[in-house]
Length: 450
Image 1 (cartoon, rainbow, N blue to C red):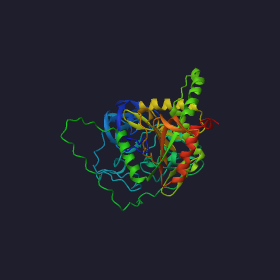
Image 2: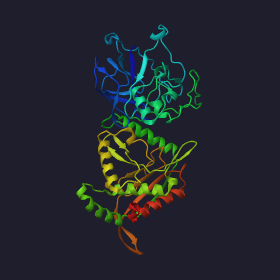
Image 3: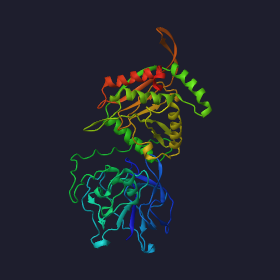
Image 4: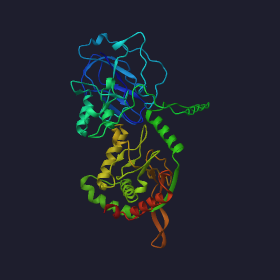
């Protein structure tokens, strides 16, 4: 039976993508794990791999095609023993948009009334890769087994083995109850998956209808050039709009004297020169913010509708500007890393971010963000929180200013730092305490090295 290969969701925010390049052609034989194509998501260009074995019978979506919806058929795979030349493309589907976020999961899908049995609908599979965060296509069917053998994709079996998960207790969401990557990711080691909603049982639908999309602005009759929005730019626009509409921001600003930090940076760079490491001011500020978050744990949090999540580690997202837009690669555990390790990691992450080579786990997550616009001469600004994080720190330029030094008016190198806090999760007093600790660490930088 032919297998319908679908556009996978390669990140939690991905709704559509660009099929940038096919790495296989019609007639090629593929096996599980073979890299088949490159997909441009909302954040990066990533490879993805085959789950099943067979022959590429037909490519349905040409490379370079934009706005391919997640779940859309992109190719047909002929299984072993099947005549690939006899496989035809599936009939065109209705233009009615499919429900999102599994809203109608469990309802029977429509079939062609002129076909019955195995002809009613081809078997469906999804492609995945090492960072697949795809949504289950049809959850709720226990994984059937033949002779005690659980049906699961090779990738799901490998990940289950690494995590110590018993697949016999996992509910499969793939075709015919097959266990796929998403099922294993959601299962807990040593425990059975939570019972899924029974087939045919409708999920309640929210009563409120979504607000109509605003009409596009009228382009004035002025000479201009129009550029198509990239997937990344669309995602940035959507997420930042949601942040300002849904997250009540509170802004707290401090002036910070940099002279001691600059002196220490010079001494450290002299000692690190033989290792090819050169610390930037921003590397040291990443460390200072991470240390401050551990010292003030009430700010190292995430708000959810019914929970306040408090993190035990400070993962700092560092804003990096790329030709496609802003992306925030993450320095994991910055509170425990040395300054040289942070510097090396930030340079590597920034370089790969500009080449669209980051893996999803390298830019998804983080407990707080830092955005530095000092290199552009910006004195002070207020950054937009990157949900679901609880805060972001905006760093301005260090400049010579009149300043009280040791009780007397003098001249010092001073920068302005502004913290944006999610007021649902972080009280003003707690945010002020974080800014105070951050200021102390920067002005007495040996404290962050202890």
